[in-house]
Figure 1 (cartoon, rainbow, N blue to C red):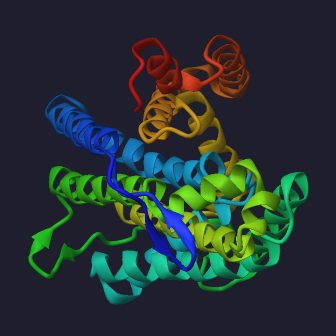
Figure 2 (tube, rainbow, N blue to C red):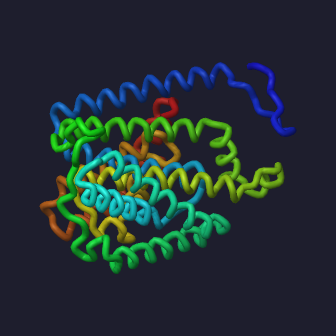
Length: 328
């Protein structure tokens, strides 16, 4: 290992050989993972895969916040839903231009994340979670009353338009590759955040905030930055969903939507890179194939969740990590 360098009086270790090997393993695993998803697009209905990818991005955003920052949010539906509304409204008002719609939706959700985060990050534990839930409910009632959201009817028949003016997204398979690229970028951002010096500081704050503060780190600023990044990724997922499914409704900002990334992350594996993606695929597939059971879906889903927590306390990917001894 190379000798450590000094930054503002704090020792920062140089990159060691094991970390380089870990990085190479991650590149290999991610390449295989993305290749498998791309291969599935040949055999699986594109809309179903795009739904999984959108919810996977949503779950990745929550995993960053809770898995690596220790901040349990019950209000992520606010970012997903607000971005979905802004994206849908922009696309419909402009008659297309999906890249502008998704960008504005992501920015709107990120700005909302900055406001909610500034009010919530000074609290910890259940207080933080309840503040995010309460503020998300305010967003829900705002969307229910605002004129641009369409009230209970929502925004329907959102045009997909042409990406960059010449790539037609009306074709589901073309749109899939666009969503696939956004998903891959989300995984990359997640990995870079977690394995950067910023990410290491976040882990120290998660494990022992008073000690991190005693070392001179302004923990509130770090938590707020993480909250905004998480909100931004959730917003990107919601904005993309509006273009894919061509609608935005109150369901997107309802408090039950905030439970989806929690469920997906815990089933897939909290604090892992690929866990939220596996959890999203599992839950979305579950909703699709259990749809015929009507109102019993929630009961069955709850029982499966309990069984998953009991049998796989570290989630599916966490269990695989423990069994293989490799970090995923």
